[in-house]
Image 1 (cartoon, helix red, strand yellow):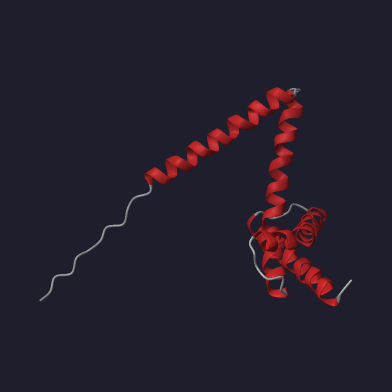
Image 2: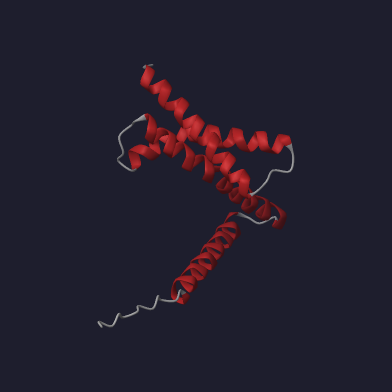
Length: 134
């Protein structure tokens, strides 16, 4: 293991923790244990996924990019894991099988797509003002 690998992982961990703390500023945890779990999930996800994220974007594997990608992954990790958990809890409460579960997920994604398309179509265009030469 080289020193650059270890420093890159430490930078990703710091970025993930900072990203998780940034997410906690928006959705405040209820208890200290909840905050520790969120911080751990954000940090662990950043350590695991930062190198993959950097290679996906074709960035050089520098400490700065490790910190940057760790921050992004740390911010997003808890939201995505919470969303997936809610989908599974909802499916368990309905006692549905795999086919019903897939159709529910498809319906949710279609609803999200419809809302996004509606927002894009309703976005007003900015008016341009002409200047008159005097």
